[in-house]
Image (cartoon, rainbow, N blue to C red; front, side, top):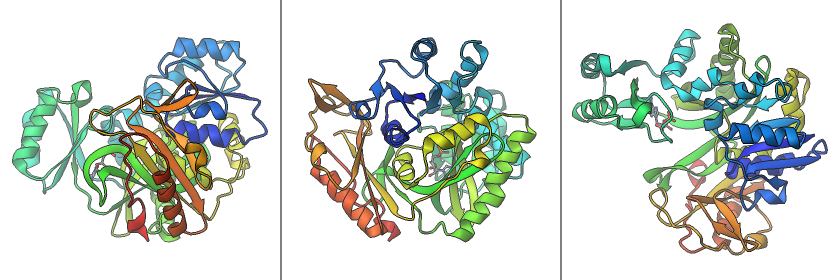
Length: 424
Ligand code: AMP
């Protein structure tokens, strides 16, 4: 099979690494890829939303399957685009169509879906500009802190946790009246604050049957001890010790099964990954959010724990017989530490030469924001590399990933040295 992976981050590097191990793959392409993905396949200079360019490439290079990494092309309808073109219709796309992608693209849509199907989530109501005064009145009736969410995609910035009523009212006005998050905040979901520990669960589905992938915990804050600004993710660990079998059974019964059944009842096809962000509230799981793709950097911890051939599983998704495929998981722990550029998550530096990647022997190094200049990897993004160790114990995995993160050098490099140590 020839497979095209869409995307250029650490997640897509991990996909490329894993799929390159499959003996079913003849040629792997990554669009646009980065300085590391070229090791597993061929980088293709196409942007993720260039559907015409992608279609042309797929036809010319006889691509048999397209695997979509990031949410944007899914929300923009890349899967629908393929289905609407007679020459492309037969080529499976892993990642849902536009309608299902609203589970991530619209928090209001996701909330209504969960309420309709009895899936545990925080109580919420949605408001727009025409119902602003009702929204302000609603805020007066709620407990603090209170959570305000821009309905649409806002690059991970659209969620505000407000400690006071004044702040909540001002933010609601800013979002609805002043378009604080542009179009994304034309509608706002006001949601009850849930107190607990977060984790993410990943599901692969063909729309009918499903496989539960390893759970992971990610670390979003820039600073050690979970302090400072939010980022795209500074590290991840899988498995998650507090997600024991009893808890995961609750997740499957109360959340995963009703989600798959709910999609079926609503007549919404779904072929791809579902990322379920959960809050463990005193032992009970609640959904914080759905994403319609794998997470980054969770993928870099989840895929190394899958021993089965990922391409076989994805073929199961494409053909609608996922239930016949086997998913074997490693009992080991995977720990991922992300190396970022100076200044990240604000304006960051780029174009720094990266040294010593090839000297890291006991961890996998997944490229994220990198580019090749005269054969040398240079930084080209906020999150530059993800270093993943897979070891028998959590302690060893954390030690190894953190030590190897320290061995790689580029000017201004920063990484958290405490990823996962709270879980020991
Ligand atoms: P989201 O973009 O929905 O993942 O929200 C970003 C972050 O805000 C989450 O990872 C949580 O840490 C936090 N958050 C979102 N919703 C809630 C809630 N209802 N209660 C507490 N924290 C929340």
